Image (cartoon, rainbow, N blue to C red; front, side, top):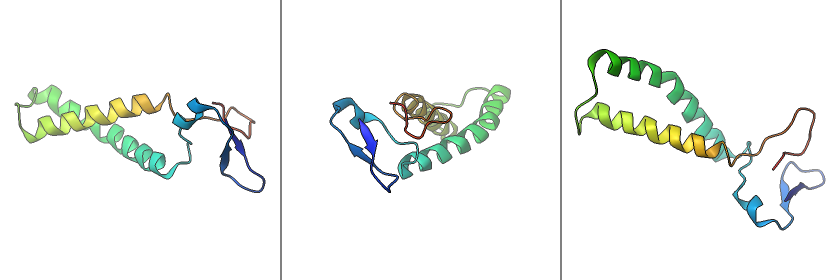
Length: 96
């Protein structure tokens, strides 16, 4: 379990092995990923509307590659939902 250190926003490791897999919601890589995910959510609706209007892209085309990229982003974001800590309302320490 990670416990907050005095006068710091960082957490100190206290020994639980599974806590090493928990990602802080303030991790700079996670914040970058969240921004990428939000941009993907905003742009994918237009992309999938285009596919609905003109049909599925051909194999090997640029549109198919973009479709695969969206799918990978959404799958990784789905998995991250189970690994990122969160704080309950009014709590100062994240729930793990």
